[in-house]
Image (spheres, helix red, strand yellow):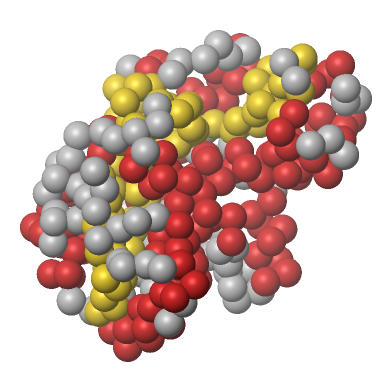
Length: 307
């Protein structure tokens, strides 16, 4: 049973996620931790003031003290520098890698049995760092990225086809960056291949728009980053874990031979339940997709060297 969740980072995503958790889940405790303690405290007080709307009894704490994450069932890492216009996820690496290492030390000390969900970019590498620094088994370190990419794909499909999102089955895999793999073979509309309903040009537009969606959003937000879809993506993961749903969701996970890759974190479809990642699903790939996924190994090697 999930009774305590801690959110590390009280920025836009962390704050929005904390509100979703307070308003939609029956938790005993919700801890919001940020090096800016006053920010975390202010967010916690603001969330508490909505208590009457939800008849919530959740205890909310906002603080800069990492001791408050003690005995958490799930910890979400949103802390770090947000990606801004003109900034690649790699630009974030040196700053956010240090943040991830420091946070991992605290998690290992105060909540050694928890499940960790990473949101901080560059997401796949941060997921890898958290796994290595905590020493947690791979089922307990989950990167949110490919879930967000997949829901963005569903939205782009809706806008291109004008069909209900309930009609689609689709997911994105690979790294959480512009090189993500948006596979036509894994887009289904009411069980049928996408090509039955969409032209080749439309499918190509969908793939390109999905891959560049994050950058498009940032180009308009300037010095802010996306937060509505990212925060609800994390909430979806937490809810799936809390309800032991055994739902297939694409997330970043450490691979150990799956898809021919080892010692890299990459987004692939997984069964999610109360244990975290219960099973990694290996789907059939085209030769081109296999080559793209294989290229992750070299890119990840370079990232690890920079970190």
